[in-house]
Image (cartoon, rainbow, N blue to C red; front, side, top):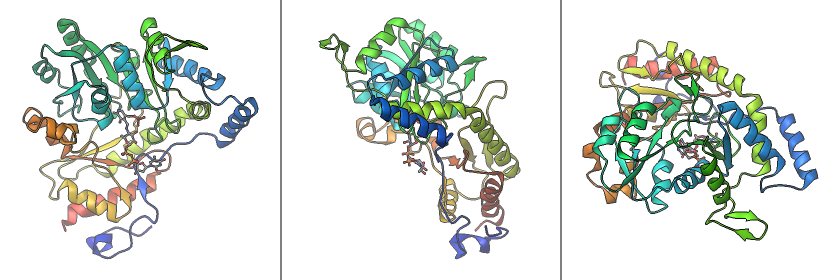
Length: 391
Ligand code: T4K
């Protein structure tokens, strides 16, 4: 690792990059390989690879238990889980969502002919602003999808109140919130249901995968049918459906990673703290915090670049990339600025000033079990030199 003390040490000035190999946001955390191989052997021996096999059943039991909910309906990925939950809830017409989220939240609606209506966020929390949600309600609105962005809970109670007042369905995209709590209660049991993602880049992964968590027996039953073509028995289909099933080997990865989860959270929490200390005192630079009275997974290190910072967010990203630090601008430029929404609602930005402002400020930094304190100190050293020496 090169020493980074002044501007001449930076890759943009001809020095070699700080890291030989790229540092990624979303580098997968992987539990015991031996335990995984053991599961794989057993799966091969059984020749039962998919369709609600024993490993999937064990995985669902353990995930439901971990989150303190009655039902975990595992799926092949978080996006299909969202789509199935949306259909099972009977959403139609217009559904209110934040624009400041991963595009899957909006696409899961429009893919089913439902109009996502984008409401603004609170710039402090990055989650839906309940007053903005109220402003977007029309006679066609049937529901709200809150997103627990970065694993920080959406304003659950305020959204619940709005939903009750207007007779709307409420569900949550909890793709970032595995293992997080709100008001001391695990996320997973708020609203009608909550959707998890276990994508490779999530702090807890099943290669690809997702799940819906719910305490509603009827909803769970409908989703079980929907994820398996509506089959109720061998030759009997009673419901429209799709193929949303999780496979055995994915569930095995999940069980192995569940055993390692405490150590992953500990690593993330430590990384977060090292970043916080190493980046403190830089003008215009702040790290989004976590509520320490809750359970957090600390999976995202979200740095904000404010107006007082002498260099722009995009220039910082450019220079980090030159050092092989693959920081990301999640979730720039906001769903409303991506197709097809950009063309459908060219003036949506007028109602989304906080979304635009936050999306222009955020830099997500690499973390997870593949990062250690020294690497983080080096990432921070690059940022410090960039800002303090002002190229
Ligand atoms: N709702 C929300 C709020 C979400 O954030 C997501 C997914 C969903 C719903 C949908 O859930 P899924 O259907 O995906 O289960 C990534 C993920 O693909 C996506 O799952 C995730 N959110 C989103 C926040 O991040 P990209 O476009 O950034 O992926 P990509 O390929 O650029 O990977 C990110 C970084 O991770 C790269 O620097 C490379 C590194 N990486 C990636 C993979 C796949 C690895 O090091 N190893 C790997 O295996 O979307």
